[in-house]
Length: 193
Image (cartoon, rainbow, N blue to C red):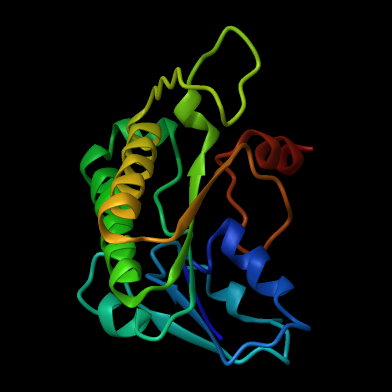
């Protein structure tokens, strides 16, 4: 089985790839554009996993051959800083929406299953507790808007092109990892402590 992880060296990816040991993989391809320079995420990986690292951007034409033969694609590549997304709206749109579209269309063509990571930021401010059945979505940043539009695109691709996918809306992520992000509240609190 071939597993492909985009954004593999980021905060979530660098933790995920350390937990793939003890499973049977033919290949685990790690794709990252190294924009955050988290080279350290490539060290200390489980030795029983046949990792292959490729420096590539999800917006590049290189994605087609890289995803060839993939059984499962975990799509983590994204620009994730919601507060800073106002100053880099074009880049957020390109990476978070267009990058997801590129990966999803290739998955549909290849018949690969897609695990897409979204965010609870799509809910925005709410009066009551929300869960995945909430239909009053109110994204309040370019980051959240790009993620919600990507979710809707995947739904369309599932209906029209047979894309097999699941979207997970994670909240604030906190875990120590070599790809640590310090623009999230919990990680910043711990760092300051």
